[in-house]
Image (cartoon, rainbow, N blue to C red; front, side):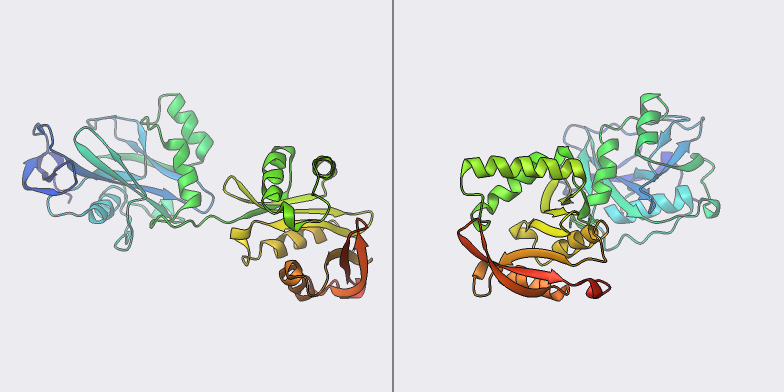
Amino acid sequence: MPEEKGNEIWDIYTKNREKAGYTRRRGDRLEKGEFHMVANVCIFNSKNQLLIQQRQPFKKGWPNMWALSAGGSAVAGDCSYQAAEREAWEELGLKLDLSDARPDFTIYGDHSFNDYYIVEQDVDLTRLHLQEEEVKAVRWADREEVLKMQEQGLMIPRWFLGQLFEIRQWYDAHGKECHKVQIDFAAMKNLAAWMNLVEIMRDHFPGLETEEKWEDYQRTVEKNIQRGTAICAVDGYMLVGVLLFSTEQNRLSFMAVHPEFRRRGIATEMIRLMYTKMNRSRDIVLETFREGDERGTAPRALYQSLGFEPEELCVFDNQYEMQRFILKAEQKGR
């Protein structure tokens, strides 16, 4: 049986989160400069739903309200992750191993350090053993449901509830980015970021030298977005890859990937999405830099790895010698 909350003994910490060398009993008044540690667990499933619990109506502090998955104060001798594991076990009967985890974030209260651990696990709710003294019910809820419950006064208010779902998608327990680059057809909302990305590499693309040509290019991008022939790669809120194509000409017209995001397969994934709109019974064509031009080393290697074959040289905009590549119709299944 878990220790009675009123009998809990807390380690006391300084403002720098160093142990002060003494303890307090739960319920004792903490003096200025005294802090205790609180650990919370936020469990998400693979559908990006949060496991929430309803507190018992007779429980002190937010009775009958819905809360995060599990949480409570660390007892004397606990480190942060041990307290989080213990709370998940006591309240939900759920065994977690957080020994290699760090809190995803910490919020500082008047007398507390509140650590939050984000866990992804498709928990079978029917197998949980709820602590009768504290937990009335549990359920899964998506972001919209959680925010609506908070607005209705059913959820313990937390200013970060909306951001919690974003943190879960972007970072693991060690603060390492873990979200995936999203490849999709571009929308008009992507236009400003699209032009911002291309401007970084403007000198590498013949035909974008003058302001007149730059404005013409933007109009071309807008038309392609409206036609559904523009593809972009998004990392969080940042556009990191763009591709224009023509279904009439069966042509890859333009492609660029942010310099810091190359060698991650982004260009390949954008091209594969383009294939879904192309006429696969016809050759797919593109033009890129000729052999020997250092700007063309990487794209030429990419196109050839995808089955494109170099064809005749051609002059672009009456100035730049380029080379045509063709993915022949009978090779599209590769």
